[in-house]
Amino acid sequence: MDDAPSTIALIGNPNAGKTTLFNALTGANQKVGNYSGVTVALKSGETFTPHGKKLRVLDLPGCYSLRAPSPDEKVAVDALKGELPGFAKPDLVVCVLDASNLERHLQLALQVIELQMPTVIALNMVDMAEKSGLRLDPAKLSEELGVPVVPMQASAGKGIIELKQALRFPYPTSPDVRWATESDDLENSRRGFIRDLCELVARRPDAHQLTVSDKLDGWLLHPVIGWVAFLSVMFAVFWGIFSFAQIPMAWIESGQGVFADWVASLLPEGDLNSLLVDGVIGGVGGVLVFLPQILLLFFFIGLLESSGYMARAAFLMDGVMSKAGLSGKAFLPLFSSYACAIPGVMATRTIDSAKERLVTIFIAPWMSCSARLPVYFLIVPLLLHEYEGSWKQALVLFGIYTLGTLSAFVVARVLRGKLGPDTSKTHFMLELPPYRGPQWSYIFRHVLERAWSFVAKAGTIILGLSILLWALSTYPKSDDENVDALSHSAMGRIGAVIEPVVKPLGFDGRIGTAILTSFAAREVFNSSLAVIFRVEEAEDDEKTRSKLRDRISSATWPDGRLLFTPLTLVSVLVFFIYALQCLPTSAVVARESGSLKWALGQFAFMTGFAYVASMLVFQIGRLLGF
Image (cartoon, rainbow, N blue to C red; front, top):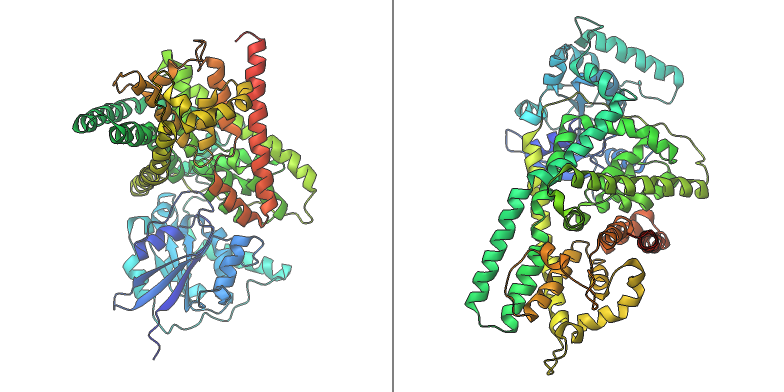
C-alpha cells in the first residue's frame, strides 16, 4: 500500500480567499491581501484530516478560467493535469468561491467540475455575503452542482473542520457535465445556468438593494472625487510616517548612543574600540534608526490592502496606465515594487502579454522601494530641518514617489512604442471585493515579517559591509600625525578617484564612495556616511555620539563650504529615485525576462539616467543661484 499522502489543490478566482484557507489548513504564513493576484506561484504545505490522514495542500495561482492565457494561470492548469514538474496530479480539488460574488466565481467552478476530478466547493466569506443581504442555500447549491459544498469563513477559522471532514479518499468523481467548453452556444448556456442557479441559492430580498460597498464606491470611484480621495489617502500615509515615527526614532537614537558609550567605556581606545563603536554600532545603527518609519509604511499598506481599498486604487490607476501603454494587470506588480522590486518583477507572471510584461519588468525598479526609505528619511529632514515631522516633509516624500512613478510611465510609453503592438488583445478583469474591517492578524504578521526582514538584513549584509567600510576608512594608517587619516586610508583614496566623476552632481569623494557602496544595497548609503563621518569625528577626539544628521549637516569641503547644501541634498534624492542600486533585482530581472541583455540594459539605462538627471538638477540649480 502506498503511504504517500494524498494531494489536494486549492483553486479559485483571485481574491477568493485561497491563501487564507491555505494558511488556516497548513499553518503557513503566506501573504494575504484584499486585492487580486497576490499568489503568483504555486505553494505547498501539509495538513491532517480529523482522522489523522496526512494531506499535501497546493495553493494554486488565482485564475478566472482554465484557458490559461497568462503564465500564472498556466501553472494552475498544469498542476491540475499533473504536468507540473515535482508535483503529482491532485487527488481532489477544493474550489474556493467568494459567496458574495457567487455568479462570477461559479464560472471557474463549473470548468473545474467538467474535468471530472473529485471536487469540493469551499463557499468562503459567507459572513460578508449575508451582511450584504444575500440568503445562501449551500445544500441546494450542492444538489445542483452534484458536489459537496462547505460554507465557511476562512479568515476566522470557521468551517475548517467541516471542510477537512469533507476530504474523504478515495473520492467519487464529479458528475459528467459539459458546461465549460469552447463553444459560444454552450458558453451562453453555462451563463444561463449560473444565473438561474444564483437565483435559487443566493437570493437577495431586495434585488435593487445597494450594499455599503456599492454606496462607498459611488464616491471613491467617482472620476473626480475618487482621485481627490486617493491622493488624500496617499498624502495622509506619508504624513503619518513622518509624524508618528518621531518618538520611537528618538528612543532608538538615544538607546544607540547609550549603548555605544557603554561599549566604548569597557574597552581601551584603539582599533577594537573603534571597530565596535564606529563600525558596527555606528554603521548598523545608521540604518536601524529608520525602522519605525518603514514599519509604519507597511502598517498603512496592510490597512489599505485588507480593507479592499487597494483594489479601488487599481481601478483608478487603470486609466492612467493605459496612457502609458500598460493594462491594469501591471498595477499589482508595480505596486508590489513599492515594497521591493524583486517580488514586483516576479508578480509580472500575471501579465499574459509578453511585451507588456517586459516593459513592466523594466520600469518596476523606479517604484521607490522600502530600501530607499532610509535614504529618504535621512535626506528629507535635512532638506527641511525646520519642519520636523510636518506636512511639508510628507509633501516632499509624496513628490518623490510621484516623480518616480510618472517617470516610469513615460519610459513605459516609449518602450511600448519601440516594441510594437501586441499580436493579440487581452481583456483585463478586476475584482472589487467588498470593503472589510482590518484583518489585524494579517496586518501585524505582515509588519512583523517586514521588521524581521529589515533587522536580518541589518544583521547580515549591512553589518558585513559596515565592518568592511570601517576597515577601508581606517587602513592603511600613516605614521605622520599631520596626515589626514581618512584621506590616507583606502576609503579616502577610493574617494579621490571617484570625486572627479561625481563632482558635477555636487558630491565629493565621501558621498561618491557612499553611493558606490550602495549598489550592493541602498541602505548601505546611510551606513557608509555613518562610518565615514564618525571616523572623522573620532579624529578630533570628540567622543560625542551625535546624530548622523547632525554630523553630515556640518560636513564641509576643504575650503570650508558646506557640503550638504539644499541643492546637493536634492541632487542626492534625484539620484536615488532613478538609480538601480540593487544587484539581486538585476539577477531576478535576468531570470524572469529570460534575457541577461535586458537586465544589463536596464541597469545601464537607469544608472545613466540617474547620473544625468542628478547632474542637470545640480548644474541648473547653480546657474539659477540656488
